[in-house]
Amino acid sequence: MKIFFSLVFLIQFHFVSAQIYFLTADRLFDGETLHTGWAILTNGNKIISVGPVDQIKIPTGAVKINYHNSTILPGLIEGHSHLLLHPYNETSWDDQVMKESDAYRIVRATIHAKNTLLAGFTTVRDLGSEGAGYADVELKKAINHGIVIGPRMIVAGRAIVATGSYGPKGFDTDMTIMKGAEEADGNTLIKVTRNQIGNGADVVKVYADYRWGKEDNPAPTFSVEELKLIVETAKSSGRPVIAHTSTAEGMRRSILAGIETIEHGDEGTQEIFQLMKENNVALCPTLAAGEAISQYKGWKKGIDPDPEKIKKKKESFKLALQSGVTILAGGDVGVFPHGENVLEIELMVEYGLPVMNALKAATSVNAKAFHLDKELGFLKEGLKADIVVVTGDPSKNISDLRKIKFVMKDGVIYRQEK
Ligand SMILES: [Zn+2]
Image (cartoon, rainbow, N blue to C red):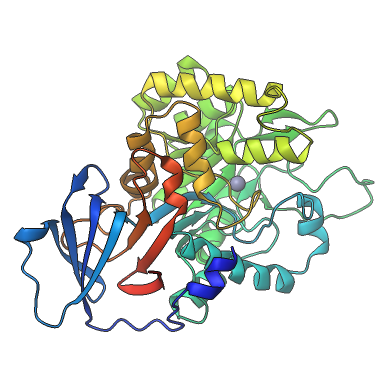
């Protein structure tokens, strides 16, 4: 991490000059295909052209940047972050929600945002402030205003949970404990959905199941009808609904209700993944969160055998791959350190996703699923100048995505190393 602070060239304000950049490297991944000997030309915050080096006309005054033994890629897109959370082995989720003030959490989040951007993730879909109100909306605003640096954010705000289902919990019933998301049921769902949208939610997140009751077993929360109410309400304002769900029944209800993406999906079956595919529902598997939590509980990866939870996750991920369901790249980062986002993409490959598909997931596939593909996720003429360069060839070794040399977001360079 230290390297971030020594070698990084930062522009601390959001000023897009009409600067023209001509960027070359050995390889260029355009979001779909890997090319050799290609270059990219940007002007201000737009990509002007992409193609073979000798076919691009370089305007006079263009700043030429070349990287040896390197690959140019679209700015990476994190599909599932919580910039307001930090790793649970530092502070438990309960204590973050109940004991850390929003002010403290927001100060931390500004550093999380910076680390995310400098790791090459120029966009995040941030799925819930977990008890920090609409701090995500305000962080997004501060980034957009150039007050702090960070990725472009799609935010969910507080998120919706069924009464009695979400934590922190386990206290005497006389205690009123603030929850990590907003409780709503039946007819109040319309009001709460509208209110969350009014407060800045770009996407509405609902918990379609959760560890519920005294045994803390995962169980479906909302009925299909309730989920449909949320979807209809959000959709009429042009916003998608996404669901946290790990049980097969929670997933089934989410699919039937018109939810666009399923987060986690641990207990998905062949039949459920098939249903997702038929209904064009994408899966964000969050493999990294599962691995991090198992390690916090004492699992030594590579030494100890896989815990039951990891074994099951590997099996269900395999079923998802076989079904052909769209797989998104989103790690639930915040459970593990911000800036370590590549971990999810590495694990997707480790669990059986072909490496090119993993690269697409973190760029063009995420962009399409998040309705951003007209602006992001590809290196194509006319799109936003979100570009990263890494040393090596991530199509051969996915971990080369960690070797970030250059980060441009919206035409502004945030990291540039020799
Ligand atoms: Zn999450």
